[in-house]
Length: 119
View 1 (tube, helix red, strand yellow):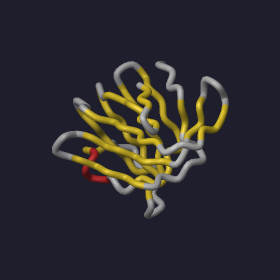
View 2 (spheres, rainbow, N blue to C red; view 1 turned 135 degrees about the horizontal axis):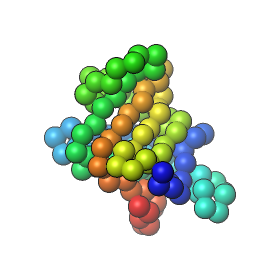
View 3 (cartoon, rainbow, N blue to C red; view 1 turned 90 degrees about the horizontal axis):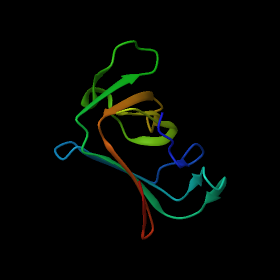
């Protein structure tokens, strides 16, 4: 498992953008948890997931994953975020109070922090 250096466990998203044609998701936050320095950083930031080869999604309680477009909703919180080999796995809550597992295959992950970029 590849280590991700940031977390959004207690952060509510302030903006969500999904560009299905260009395979890009942007989730905006007002802060994040720096897992390296073990401190909360209060700074506008954007988590970017893009260029995925494949993406799938399932609603909590269901067994089967479907195409991302079938269940994707506006993400309000990222409850967990991990990278396992070529898979990026997110467990999220949406504004309509659904819990989703999202899997992105061979994606790029970036955190853009007010004029700083972390991969």
